[in-house]
Image 1 (cartoon, rainbow, N blue to C red):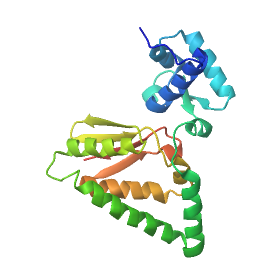
Image 2: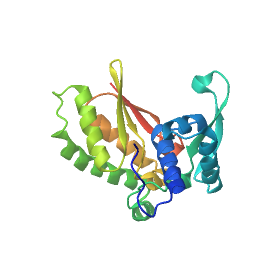
Image 3: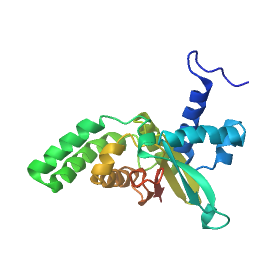
Length: 214
């Protein structure tokens, strides 16, 4: 039996919140996917999706699964929808970086982020020793990122590992200062001591940040 909702929280609102969470965690989903995950009928899921569309929290687009087959309508979060998830001190960070850029030029922003990387790498290196198998290092890094609100998932495909970040707590900053994303990639290269490539970015509207490692 499923848990009862908290007192004072209408069931439809709980369902809509769960819909947003599912789209956030699992990327573009169809109404059928969402209905199955919520254990509700497809018409019920569509009603909730309609409300979220009206609130501009999600958007509907057409995709072909795997690039083939019949087009499907899938739902993804809008920027307003992303903003319903935790973001950390974004306004302050943007203001500080803007002033640094204004006073010292764009290169100064990257130098500040590089200095931050040195400090972060120093903290993480003791927790990710190179003698550990790569998978253990990736999982340990994911655990630290979860503490910062990144909501990670680790996947393996043959010899390669994938680190998937389903939330970006620094999204507002990253959209205005892509140097932050480049700094993050550099940090992962340093602390994992392995080849790292990024093929998706939340800041580009791709739902998740995904890193291929190894």
